[in-house]
Length: 451
Ligand SMILES: Cc1cc2nc3c(=O)[nH]c(=O)nc-3n(C[C@H](O)[C@H](O)[C@H](O)COP(=O)(O)O)c2cc1C
Image (cartoon, rainbow, N blue to C red; front, side):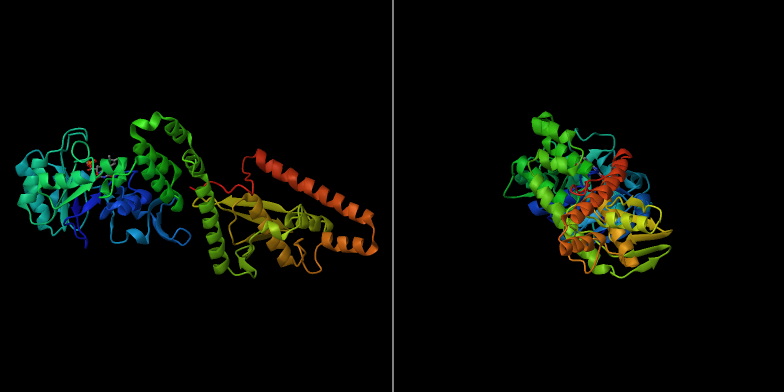
C-alpha cells in the first residue's frame, strides 16, 4: 500500500482496507478503540467517478451516491484526517507497471524475491509517497500462509519513508501487546491490521481485549446511528461471530433481513426504534425549515410543504375523505393518487389529480398512506376547501354539520353524519385494500426499513 497523505505514518496502528468490512461503523469503532488511521473498503475508481456527493444533514455525513441510489462511501466529521480512501481498479496491477505509481494510493504485494521487493519499494519511494505498507506475502500466497517478517524488515531497512507492516493477523497478532511485537519483528514504523480487527476491533485498545459480544453491540450502535446497509451490518457481525455463527444468536442473525431484525437478535430493538424516531424527527425539522408553506408551481404540479399529522384530525376523519366528498359534490371524478418511493430513506411522496390538476406535498412521508393524505391537504388548501382538521375555522362539512346538529339539539343529524363518514371511510378503505393487494401498501404506524 502506498500512501500519499498529510497524515503521519510513523508509530501508528491502522485498520487495513477490507472489502465490505471497512464501512463507516467499523472505521469508527476501530478509531474508538485506538486505531490512528482507518482505511475504507476498496472502492472501484470507475464506480466512484459516477457517484455524486451528497451532504446528508439528517445523519450528519457526507455520502457518495451511485446512480442507482446506493451509498458507495459514507464519511463523517469524526474520521476527518483519519480515513484513507482506497481506490481500486489499479491495485496489484501497478506492481508490474511502477511508472504509473504516482500521487495515488494503491495496494501492492510482496514480489518474488527480497531483492525485487526492495527494488520496487525504492522506486515507489522516489515518486515522493509519504509511506508504504508492506503485506508480507507473495502474490500467489493465501491469507492462511504464514507472513514473511524478513521481507518487511528488508524493506524497512532499505527505505527512509515509514514502512507499515501488514499481514500479521493470523499467526502473530492476537492481542494489543502483539502489535508492538509484530512491529519489532519487522523493524517497521507502524502496523496495519485487517483480520484481527475484523474479528475483534478492540485489539486496537491497550485496555482490551473486550469480549466480542460487547464489541458487536458497539458496532451495531454505529450501524444504527449511521443507517448502515442491513446486509453489510449482518456480514460484519457474522465475521465477528466466527465459529459461533451456528449458535442460536448466529442463526437468528443469519435469518435477519432488516436492521430491525438484526437489532432484535441482539435485544437492541428499543435503541433501534428510538434512533429511527430521532432521525425521522430530524428529517421532519429539516424538511419544514427549508420548504416554503405557500403553494409553488413545479412544472404541472402545485406543491406546498405540508406534513400530515394524524393527531390534528379527529379519529376516522382524514383529508382524503374530505377531498373525496368534495369531488363528489362537485361532480368531479374521484381523486387519483400516484405515489413514489425514494430509495435513500424509503420515504414516500404522492401526487393527487383532481379536475385534471395535480397537487403534491414537497415533504416526504414515512408511509404511502401519509403521503396521500399530505397530497390531499395540499389540494384542499390550494382550493380553499376545508380538510377536517380539529379546530379548523368554519371548516369542513363534518364539523359544520356537527355544529348544526348541536344547535338544533338533534341526535338524528349526528347519526346521519356518522353514517356518512362511515360510508366515505369504507370507500377509502376499499382503495387502500386494493393497494395492499398490489403490494405497494405501507402501514402508517410502521416506518419502513432503512436501506
Ligand atoms: C475481508 C477482507 C477484505 C479485504 N479487502 C481488501 C481490500 O479491499 N483491499 C486491499 O488492498 N486488501 C484487502 N484485504 C487484505 C487486507 O487489507 C490485508 O492486507 C490482509 O488481510 C493481511 O492482513 P492481516 O493479516 O492483518 O489480515 C482484505 C482482507 C480481508 C480479510
